[in-house]
Image (cartoon, rainbow, N blue to C red; front, top):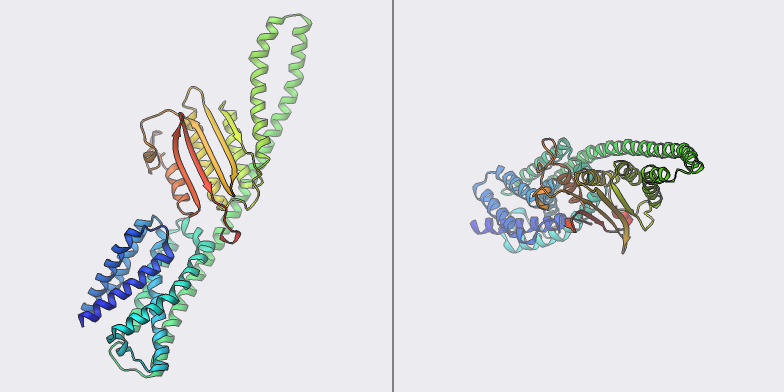
Length: 443
C-alpha cells in the first residue's frame, strides 16, 4: 500500500510541476523545481498515508508561499491550487470515460501503477494547453488588477480556490473505497465539474467588476493627465506672452543705450539680462520642439510637466527624441509608464540640484522595434551602491523617502518584456529602460 501511496504522490507532484512550468516560466529558475517536487511528493505521501485531508491544504499552501517568494510575484499564489483543481477534474473525467468504455473502476485505477501513470500523461496533455490559455488570458485582461495590490481581491480569490481544491478532493476521495454504479459515477463527476464552474463563475464576476473599477480609475487618471497637459500649454502660452512684452522693453532699452552711446553699459546689460533670458528660452523651445514627436498624451504630459519644471529650476536639460513615438507603440500600461517616468525624473531633479552644476539628460527613441528610455543626471555620491538605492526604505533624504526606486522595480518586474538597468557612468547616475515591441494582442 505504501508503494501505491508513494507512486501516487510522485505522479501528483509531477503534474503540478508541469502546471507550474506552464504558468510561471521564466520567472522561476529551473533549479528551484526539484525543491517543489520533493515538497509536493513528501506532503502528498504524508497525507495519503495518514488519511488527514487537511494536509492537502498544507501542501498547497506551503508551495504557494514558496512560489510567491521565489518569483517575487504574489499573484502566483493561486497558480498551484488552480493547477490542482484542473488536474483533479481532468483525471476524474478521463476515469469516467474509461469506466464507460472499458469498465475501469476507481478501485482498479487506485491499485494499478501503470494505469495511474498512463492517466497522469493524459491529464498533463489536457491540462497544459488549458493552463497556457489561462495564463495568456490572465496576462491580457486581469494582471493589472492583481498588480495594483488589491489585497482584498487577492485574498478572496486565494481563499476561494483553496476551498474549491479541498472540496473537490473531499468529494472525489469519498468514492475511493466503495463500489459505485455508472450513474453514481456520472453524478459525482458532474458535481465536481459544476462546483468548479460555479467557483470560476463567482471569481470571474468579482474580477470583472474589479476590472471595470480599475478601468474607471484609469479614465480618471487619463483626464487628470489631460488637465495637466492643458495647464502646461497655458504656462507655455503665458511665457510666450511675457517674452513678447519683455521683447518690446528690451528693444527699447537697447535703443536707449545705443542712442546715448553707452557701449560698456550695453555690454553689461546684454550679458547680465539678455543672454540668460535667451538661454532659458532656448531650453524651453528645445523641450517643446522635441516633445512634439511624442504622440502619446499621457507620456507627453508627464514629460512636459517634469522637464519644463527642471528647466525652470535652472537645471541644464538635454532632451533627445529622434523618433516619432506613436500611440500603441509602447507595450506598457500608461499608468505604470507615467508612474515610472515621474519617479525617475523627480529623483533625477532632486539629485542633480544637490550638485554645483545640475545636469539632466533625457533620451527617448526606437531601436530595432524596441522603445528605449535613458535618464541620466549629475549627483553627489553618498556612499550607497546601486543595489542599495533600489531597496525599499534605503534613502539619503530622511524619513518618509526611499520608496521611489523600489516602487519602480516592482512595476517593471511585472513585465516579462521590459529590461531595466541602473548604473553610474562617467559621473552620471543613469536609468535605462528598454521595452520590447510585442504583438498588439499581447498588450
